[in-house]
Image (cartoon, rainbow, N blue to C red):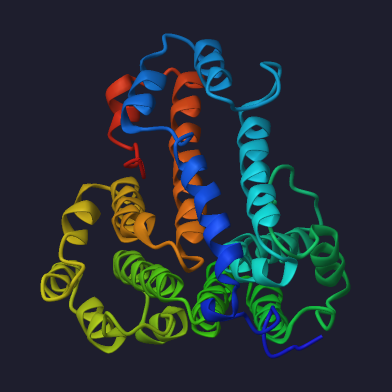
Length: 339
């Protein structure tokens, strides 16, 4: 196994057969028609009860039966998405989409290390959809031997575990693994040769850096912490962001006003949830033009991102119904639809 990175070198779009790609894009265009629209999400939110929400989704092709939990329903929908992508491309070509699974892998790595630290099994802490088996990660963490993992993940795991077990610093443990995840996403995007995936990775890292700066500033974290946390990024200067963070929240807002992310400041001022929504809506804006790109993997990548955003919105609505949240509270967190 090549331990320089999690995955095999990714294929450039030009290596994909035109006929295969045209056919794949045509099928994705058809599937786009099944995505929930903004009006669909409003109608779902307007359902008086949770059970009526489930029935509304079933009527639109979600789930096999009404007797499922919300998480089972959402997991099934994500599984169907990945099955569709796998059916459209060869196994080698489909590897490019592993870039979207990295977050699950690194999240699960954090969970495994923390479980080994507290020596307890924590229910419902692992995410579905990763490329590395959860039991493998748990075994590595329990044995303190990460040599079975790819090099980037192995190094991050060893450093993060040492920080947690030696100093009990759970936050720094998270930072080390989160940065390794973002660096891996950047590298996967570069190796793909695909412009949309490069934009996706760049925005993912920029948004993470902004969030880190704000949270670290509020928590009084020092410069060394920020240097460890910031991911490589070209659309925003980590050096200027670092300097701004030293001078307080308002200085971060002032710096953001000078960047392409100036709209982020208002969302951050509102709430962490509003910033998360802003990030997802910005991503939808980024991928919408790919509907008209018929000869690359970009429409397929856009569909994956659109579906994941849709699943987030449905999760918010179902959770809100189960917890009897006011409709306006649910509405303010909803993401924009791709269609």
